[in-house]
Figure 1 (cartoon, one colour):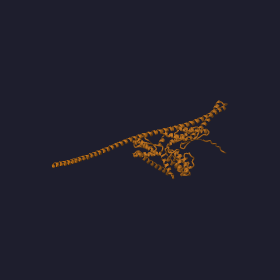
Figure 2 (cartoon, one colour):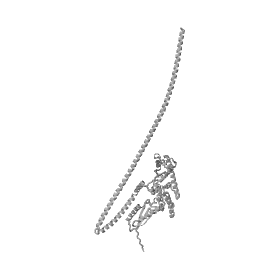
Figure 3 (cartoon, one colour):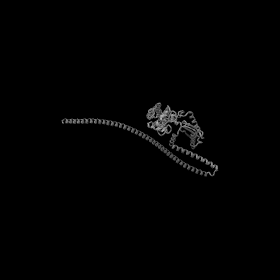
Figure 4 (cartoon, one colour):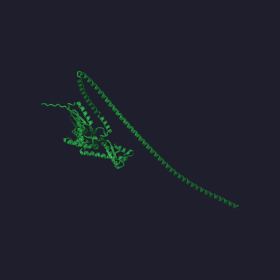
Length: 514
């Protein structure tokens, strides 16, 4: 029994030990599977996170590209819309300006029509009065024969019409003088718009040579960016046409035109043409031109021997280097006038330095007459006052064309020197042969009229002085004669500027006491 119990106990112990061992084995297997599953899960999670991060980055890049594409399209559309808006705005501004011009033109026409109507009414009243006067005269002459009455009536009528026409011409001339400034502005503005004369083109354009025609496209640039930049910075117009290997620079300001020419030549030589480079070259060209202007002014003052001028006056003198008048360089002309005035002043024993100073500065207004309103005489007087030049120098400047009475002998000498410098053959763009022919033709036209005794062309053909027979030409006829001669000169001659026609009628009574 004890053996059986021992066997049973041993079996129970072995069973319990086997169960414990099996439990431990299963526990270890389960734990190893759990650890493997956890590792797998961690690996899967890591791979999933990596894949998700990659997909997120790809989606983000695609979103950024889409946003950039949409932004570019929006900017392009906005740019096109802005361009359309600016184009429409410019068109509207142009239409508004055209309407304003038309309105001004209509108003001027209405004023002219009103003046003409008033003159017609006045003329009709005069005609009615004259008609009544002639009727009264006919009634008084009723005792004469018809032929005698007719002849007397015709003579009286001729005298009256002659007198009335002379008075009307005189009134019209006075009215024209009163409206001269307004008419001159209109004529000048119209001439600038429509003028195609050679002398205008020669003095308002510069030509820059190109190495090849491909350079024209580079100067224009993409969408005209380069040419717009150059025109905006210099204030001139670039004309690129079919002219081979050349670009035309057009503008009325000679200094700006010179700046544009130098800048364009620098850009062509450099080869790099883009807006920032253009701005740099224009700035360099401006500095170069300013230096040339200063050197030219200083050289002119040194050549004449005039010292103590204001630095700004020296710069204005230097600007005259780029200014011409009928082909004559204004700076050289000023130096010449200063030397001539100085020589005449020394001969007469008056102030030589004053004459030279006034002669050098007499055309200083031409340096900025493109920028200010008024004639170069008025502008020159204002400049002289601004920089505290003496009253005598200022008077010589404003009086050198006879607009103001000269207050000194030096002023008269400056006016004479100016006329000598401008009128000498070859000084201005006119050959000696054509110069002599013009003077001869001017005198021939004047002598072709009845009653002319002598005539003299003076001031290089700018003025013709005609002496008439006093017994043939009376005061009223002198006005008509001057008008007829001027009209014939306009019809048969070509000349620069204007020609002054002066009729001189003199009656002398001479007797001797013996």
